[in-house]
Length: 405
Length: 124
Image (cartoon, rainbow over the protein chains, first blue to last red):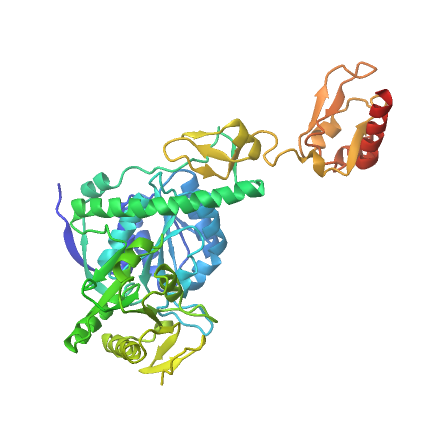
């Protein structure tokens, strides 16, 4: 058996390699920044003869996912990647893929939605997929982007799940940043990842129709089945994450990653690469005497409901960093965490870093300290959107019951 | 692949996978009535005048719902004649429109049913 090798690569390349190791057979893609390198790299691997796959160059993202889905429904492991407006253009096909219960894996390199034009990191694109029936995960670093992609094939192709899955990685911060990534050897991957399974295959000789008109009650029952499969997925993710540790030494059995949560009074929660900065901020705040922990959501769908409750329900306050906003209310993660935690801790939502505005660990330290002070001053607080922009707090709708400035 | 269907699910156009997870799937296998009996959608009923019919098969060929069956040699002159499956005929009138000898009349469905009921009552 070969040895794993440690290489320096961008997040985009890590994802491309994961598709190669998964023995993906069809990739259909349309270039969009910042994911373009993923499909360029796959094209390169195919042309060098290192990857045995068919690359379909299509005329749009709608077609990119439609062709990927078409290949998958025909029985092969298929993959695509997109970002931002490309993902929105695919939106209809996201529902077709999930509703037809066909496993497909897609990377979403997160990026802001225009206008104005902006190619930098934001989470409004990936979080708009929450309701589609796709599994949605978010990587913190390039190694995790590789690992989640490989695991996503096994999770989505598990008969208890049979739903497609998205691996999210932050635009530029991960997609274009070089980090060390350990690549496994192919034999070990082949042992970890069984041949593709799917609920049915469209093939000549056995005529069947997918997506025909059905009575309304049956439509609703299919949605109920998908919800049940999401519940199953929680279990499957844990199993596969544990197996992954056996094969590759990195454990993914937790749907949320908790950093110094157990003794913490205050939890900073969120998803994506900036949670690494949040860990540094937590250490800095601990030096100042605040017991702060970090809860990073590795999975958005299925929502890690019990994990989140176990980690944060009894805390004094939860500060939720949201790199997107459901304009007119609050950040999507704030809303989801408030719901899962029944808003028992004080909750402070912090929209920040939207459109790629740089957020350092010092920024996180600053708004977290401000939130802690509000809790210490007022006792319990519930602040949906305490917007943090260029070092300042901007109270926004919905209006807060405490004065923020 | 292990796709199976119960009679009920087939009727409703949804197929369940038996093994191993038993998911419901938005699939239908070739067969009539995925959406239930669609004949009740009909407001106009095609009625075949077998005296006029020449057995040319055009109505059978054009029927978009595949609900016309040609019965060989059952016409009054020994010709093949169309028999319509009213459980699924939606009354679109394509058969009447393509008939070269105007052997299919489109009649008002509710009047037809009322008349049928009246005649039924009369017989009783």
